[in-house]
Amino acid sequence: MLEAPSSSVINNGVELGSSLKSGSGKAFDRKKRLSLYNKTFKVICIASAVFVCLILFTILFFMGRTGILTFDTVSPLTFFFSSEWAPENDQYGAFIFIFGTFALTFLTMLISVPLSVIIAVFLAEITPSWLKTMLRPVMDLLVGIPSVVYGFLGMTILIPMLRDLTGTSMGDGLLAAAIVLTIMVLPTISRITDDAIVAVPKKYRDASYALGATRFQTIVKVVLPAAKSGIMYAVILGMGRAIGETMAVVMVIGNTPQIADELFKPTSVLTSNIVMQISNVPFDSSWNYALYMMGFLLLVISLLMIVLVRLVQRKGVKS
Amino acid sequence: MSTRGKISGNTPNPFASRRGLNQFNNRLFTLLVWVVGICTVLFICGLLFLILQKGLPKLEWSFLSGLPSEIEEGGGIGPTLFNSIYVLVISLVISIPLGMAAGIYLAEFAPDNKFIAFVRICVEGLASVPSIIFGLFGIAIFVEAFQIGLTILGGAVSLAFLNLPVLTRVTEEAIRAVPIEMKNASFALGGTHLQTILRVLIPVSLNSIITGICLVAGRAFGESAVIILTAGVTTSGEMWDFSLFSPGETLAVHLWYVQSEAIVPDATEIAEKAAAVLVFVVLLINVIFRVPLWLNARKTRV
Image 1 (cartoon, rainbow over the protein chains, first blue to last red):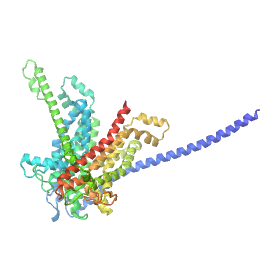
Image 2: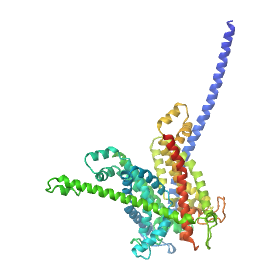
Image 3: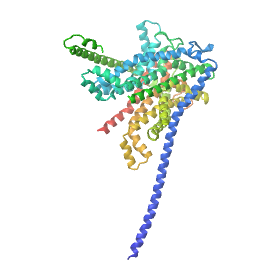
Image 4: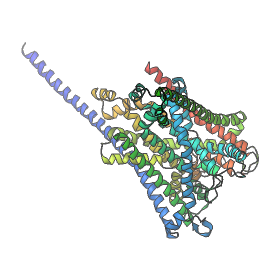
C-alpha cells in the first residue's frame, strides 16, 4: 500500500523532472533563437544607420576629390572671384553663378518670408477651425508638387505675363526665378511656421489678452517672438530648398553666363549651370572638375545650413 | 509703438484715442491677413487647377501608352510614364527597408551619446543635400566608376539615396511618438525587443510612416534633376522594357525635355498633358494612401 504511491510519487517525480528538463531545454532553445533574431535585427539596423552616414561621407569625398582637381589648372582666386566663364577658352570663373545663387536666394526670401509668416498666422490664429482642417492638408499636398511643374508654369504663364507687364523683351531672369521659387517654398515655410505658432503655450496668449492687448498686439508682440526659433528653422529650411532647387530655376532663369545686375536679365546659378552643362563634357576635363567644384560648394552651403539649424534649435531650447 | 506719441498729448481721456487706434490696427491686421492668406492659397490652388484643367480633358489612352516622337506630332508618353513608375518602385524597394531599419536603430537601440548625436546630424545633413548633388554623385559612381552609362539602375539607386534620410527621420520620429505604456505593456507580457518592435511599435506608428512614404514617393515621382543626370533624357523606345540597363527618361524629365529642348511642333500640348498627368499622379499617391489611414484613425479614435 505504501510502496505503490511512493513509487508513483517517484515516477511522478522523475516524469516531472524530465518534463521540467525538456521544458527548460525547449525554453532555452526558444530563448536562444529569439535572442539570435534580436541580435541579427539589431545588427541589420546598425548596418543601415551606418550606411546612411556612409552615403554622406562618400558623397562629400567624391565631390571634394573631383572638385579639387579644378585647382590643378585654375587658381582658387580665379575660380571664386573671376566672372569669366568660357570653358571653351579655358576660363573658369564661377563668380557669376555663386553671386546668382546668393542673389536669387536673397530675393526669394525677401518675397516668401513675409508672405509665409502672414499665411502661417492666418492658418494658426485667425481662420475658423473648419477652414483650418481644410487648408492644412491642401498646404501639405502643395509641398509635394514636382518642381518641374512649377518650372513649366513659370515658363508658360509667368514669363509671358512679366513680359506684358514690364515691356521687356525677355521675361526670364532673377525675378521670374524668385517668384517661381517663392511659390515652391511658400507651403514649406508656412506649414512649419504654423506648427511653431500652434506650439506657443495658450497661457502666453491668455496673459496678453488679460492685459488688455488686442489680437494684433498679442500676435505681433507675444506669439511671433515666442515662436521665433521655429520660424528661423522654417526660414533656413526654405532657404536650403531655394539654394538647391534645380529644374524650376533652369526653366525660367535664361541660362546665360552673365552677371545678374538687373531683375530681368538672363543669368545662371550654380544648380542650373551644372545641369545644363554636365552632360556635354567629358569626365576628365577641367570643365567637368569645375562643375563638380560648384556642386561641392552647394553641398558645403547646404551642410552649413544644417549646422545653423542646430544652433537655432539649441538656442530655442535654452530660452 | 506709434501710439505712444498720442497719449502724451493733452487729451481728456488718453486711453480713448489709443483704444480706437488699437482697434483700428487690429481690424486692419485681421483684414490684411485674411486677404493675403486667401489670395495666396487661391492663387496656388488656381495654378494647380489650371494645369489639371488644361491637360486632363485632352488625355487619351493613345497618349498615355504611345511612344514619344522626336520630329512628328502626336508623340505619347508611354515609356516615360512606365519608367517613372519603374524607377519609383525600385528606389522605394531599396530605400524603405534601409531607411526604416536605420530609423528603428536611432529610435530604439541607439545609446544617447555624442556619436549618435553626430549620426543624427549626418542624417539631417543628408536630407538637406540638394538633389542635383545626388545626380553628380550618381554620375561619378555609375557612369565613371562602373562604366554602365545612363541607366534606370543608376537613376533608381541615386533616387533611393535621396529618399533614405527622409525615410530614416520619418520612421524615427514615428516610433518615438508611440506612447511608452504600449512598449512597457509588451515587455511586461514577455515580448522580446524584436517582438515589441515588429508587433507593437511598427503597427502603432504605421500611420505616420506611410504618410512619410507617400511624401517620399511623391517627391521621387516628380524628381527630375537626379534622373536627367543619372538616367538620361532618352528612353529605349520600347513600351515594357524591364531591363535595368536601358536609359530611363521619366515623365518629369520628359516634361522639361519637351518644353525646352525638343523640336516637335506640338510640344506645348504634350507638355501640358504631361504636367497634368504628373500632378494627377502625385495627388493620387497622396490621396489613395491617406484616405484609408484617415478613416482608420477616425474609427479607432471613437
